[in-house]
Image (cartoon, rainbow, N blue to C red; front, side, top):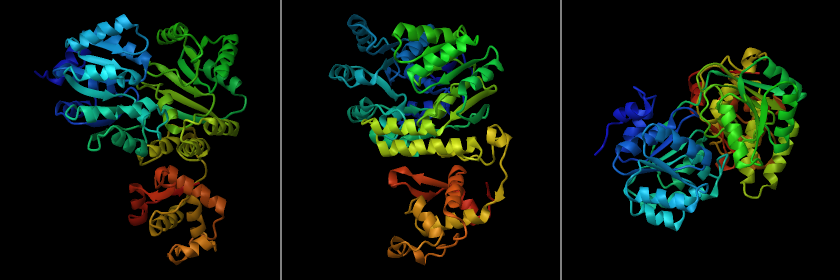
Length: 502
């Protein structure tokens, strides 16, 4: 027998009303349909699978790669009276057997399983003998090599839909661009899943980029201007986290390092001290913050530039989750770009071309003279109709020009070239280049050939990058980086929308 979702929401979670989209997602699961859910960190994704798992007959299976998150969620659910457990490598054999018995006997509402456990023959056999009401795939972007956190074990989860075609699959993530979303649907074999995409905008987080000189002094000054506030400083290396934490301690700042080199007990202690506000400042590698439920983090600093905008967005999303003012500060230097290029090139397990393209978009975000929030949201295919007013560029804007005609020329050229060329060829066509390839392909015959010959090549690069950041163009990374039009570009081409460029 089914229990109504709202009844479960009140009884087990203490809320009277659902947040936006939660009810539609839950109704989709109750109707037995597959779903893809994109919801920012802190948006309430967990409720979307926890309520159907409790309300429908059988057990909900949640695949999650985060061992610390599993334990936290299960502890929280049990405290609320929900019958929940987890299976992962942190448990001994006797504990695992006891949980498997509970699962087999129908004594669990929810069972969290790590991906490596999920794909074992033993688990497969057990799943076939128990009534399951849904499969939730958390951090679903891990299945895609386009994603910022690819995990090969996730690609083996495609057996779920094959083996259990009638059980709804719910794929959830906080960060996935258009290509990653397409990959998730294809690789999980849920091509017709209903898609629920929440807004990526977190207007309460002020965005700032500073040059990467004298970072330590700047950070010390920044923290001392915000006494008692809680924050995370992300660094690229373990050594940096330790050195920076030590320097901050010398300056009277209560800070601790956190990285994968610490023992499990040490990491747990740092996390607990941070959650309880005993240690307000953490200097961490990206391993820190996933699954930590702390709403009063007031600021995030990136000591080094992240590898991609997905990772950056996910990390800054850990501040300001209570909805009040928060600050995200990124230090940018070209030395970081060079170092990250080397890391990507030397890592045989990544798709090098894709990761370098993502790094380039991250660099463009840091260098762009345009509203940073617009750039960030455009990356996730969300268009902001006006500048945000809450980033360093908006607060100190550069001189702007009327770029409507220039933008129309560029968009018209993309349209007439049938969206088949990359940025370099587009500029060559606009500047009326005499390159042999242009004549061989007949590009010299289109109306906009040479329409922007008076504009130097570097200036066209800057203009096109701004159009990309404003959402009038997009680059199809899965189609050899060809330049394409967007919905927003139609307004400039056909409705006379004005465009300002720098």
